Amino acid sequence: MKKILTIAVLAAALLTSAASAQEQAALKKVYNEEINPLEQIDQALAQARAEGKFVICQVGGNWCPWCLRFADFITNDSAISSVIEQNFVYIHVNYHPRKATEWSSAMMQRLGNPERFGFPVFVVLDEQGNVLHIQDSSFLEEGKGYNQEKVLRFFQNWTPKAISEANKNTPLIQSTIMDNDILKALRERRSIRQYKSEQISDEELQAVLEAGTYAPTAMGRQDPWIVAVQDPDIIAQLVRMNADVLGMDGNPYYDAPTIVLVFGSRPGKWGNAVYDGSLVLGNMMNAAHAFGLGSCWILREREMFDNEEGQALMRKFGLPEGLMGIGAIALGYPAAAPQQPKARKEGYSRIVK
Ligand SMILES: Cc1cc2nc3c(=O)[nH]c(=O)nc-3n(C[C@H](O)[C@H](O)[C@H](O)COP(=O)(O)O)c2cc1C
Picture 1 (cartoon, rainbow, N blue to C red):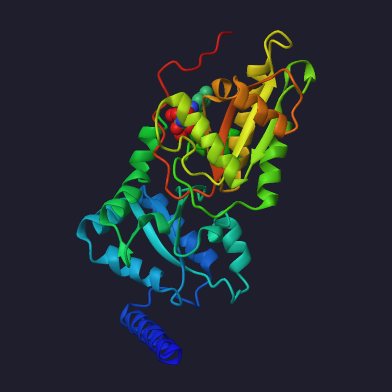
Picture 2 (picture 1 turned 45 degrees about the vertical axis):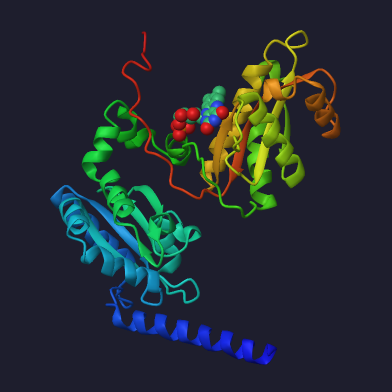
């Protein structure tokens, strides 16, 4: 019986892979495997400058069924193809993760090393060639294809007009002299409220924690204490404690696989704990974003740890007495694209000379 089942499973797998090979063969091969992609990008940029458009690089290859499926999908959807036509120079940039060409590494570096998002991956370039956005295509999928509404929204959100609207209160963004990777990460970090269940690597976690420890602290006292929790039982306890304060049933940490808590001295001992801890949390969120992790500040740790259960947990963490909860971040691989940021409010900053 077992043998029959195994054969049936194998046959089903073979049929499925034959069907997908058939589908792939039927789809148009849109990637030119001979062309130098750096020249291809340069040509697209020159055209974009002449036509007042941005460039979208759909990075992938003829080896990737999802890449060909996407190309087919957007060609056959008139609403999407018209947004592309009006706003972008759209190119298919050939890349194979296991078959490097002489151009692969320079090309990927130029596009912000987007391979971590899988394939196809979309890189939006402004007319100067700056990487404005890297789009993980898995957020646009639905079943065995793509969701029209999500794809359309992605393209509409990155048109030259959408970017200039979003930036109209933030002139520095348009000025390249003040731009660099750090400013870009600060600007582009957004709160993430959906996470993959896969745990982040220890290396990534260490990098986030280290960024926290380099936040400025009043008098350089390094008052905050940071506790990263990945133990599922303790996470479940934190979820319950936070939800209790909130008076709800759900998961206020959005199912993130890691929760990073920040504690600081109680007011009688040190009056700057909330300022210090907030900067630690901010540093960690920005660092997380800088290498592709998602995070979100989650409140209510003050109340959660201000009772016997919270104090017992702090002792379990090995923290000294006399601390209070300041805040926490949910941390993990993003499972959904964040919302576009609101335009910055009028008069947010001013200069008095
Ligand atoms: C002090 C503070 C507390 C926050 N508490 C929560 C929270 O409990 N839950 C949540 O989903 N987001 C929380 N946030 C995230 C904000 O809602 C978010 O930063 C804001 O809407 C702006 O969006 P952005 O982070 O994507 O720019 C908090 C942010 C701060 C600074």
